[in-house]
Image (cartoon, rainbow, N blue to C red; front, side):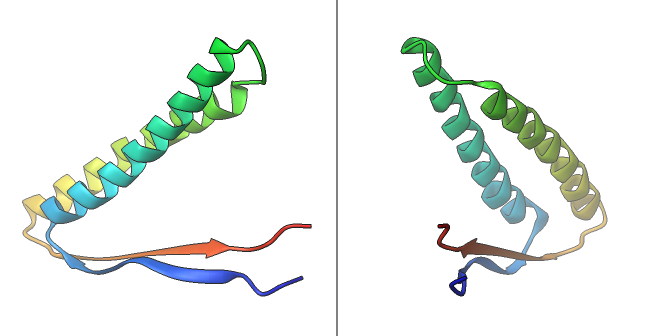
Length: 92
């Protein structure tokens, strides 16, 4: 197996408002990706949309949980350290 490639996508200290802008937009982009996948599959009457529909539901749940955490941090005046690592590995 080849060693995975890793990239720091996010690594910094943010206010809750800044963190919300970055993280919620990232999640929304993933939701949009899966929505487009569903639309293409349904339009061409091909493929199974179950995975993308399930993923959208999980992403929405993640977004709601994240918003609660960020509201709590904002209410307490807490800054946040956010790290996001992307790992890519080649599959056989």
